[in-house]
Image (cartoon, rainbow, N blue to C red; front, side, top):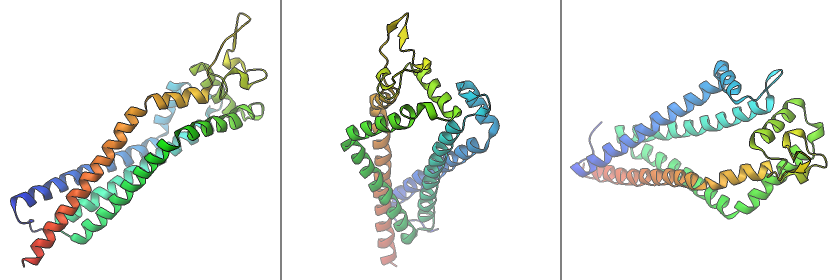
Length: 241
C-alpha cells in the first residue's frame, strides 16, 4: 500500500495502525479466552471446586447459567473490539477512506452507547440500587421456601460466606435460615442484607470501574481523532494526483 505523504502523516498512519493492531490482538485474545473457559469442562470443574459452590449433583445450574452469561458477554465485547481493530488495520494498510469511515462510524456508535450508558447509570444509581434489592427480595427471600435445591443451596452459601441475610437483613425472614446466623447464644446478631452488601461493595469500588470506563472512552476518542486525521491526509493525497 502507498504511504500517506509527509513525515507527520506517516507517523499518524503508523500510530493508527499500531493502536488498531493492539485492539485486534486484544479482542481476539479476550474472545478466544472467554469461549475456551465456556467450553472447557475441566477448567469449570476446577473453578467451581475451588469456590466450593457445588451441590450433590455437581455444578449448580444457577451458577453455571450466571457464568455462561458473563462469558458470552465478555466474548461479545472481545469480538466487537476484534472487528473494530480489523477495520482499523485494513483501512490504514490499504489507505481506504471508505473502510476508515466505516471504522469511525462503528467507534462513534460504541463511544456514544458507552457514554450514554455511563451517564444513565450515574443518574439512576439510587433507583438501580433499590431495584437490585427488590429483585433479590422477590426472587430469593419471598420464594425462599419454594426455591429449587440447587438455587437455595447457592443462596445459603452466599449468606454463610458473606455473613449476610436476605436482601436487607435478618428482618426479611419471619424465621431466618440457619445460613444467616442471625442469633448467637440466644442473642440476636445484626446481619447486613446480601443485596445491600453486594451492591455497596460494587459502589465502593466504583472509582476503579470509573477509571476503566474513562480509559476506554479516551482510547476510543483517540482512535476517532486518528481516523479523521488519516482520512483527511488520504483525501489531500488523492487530490494531488
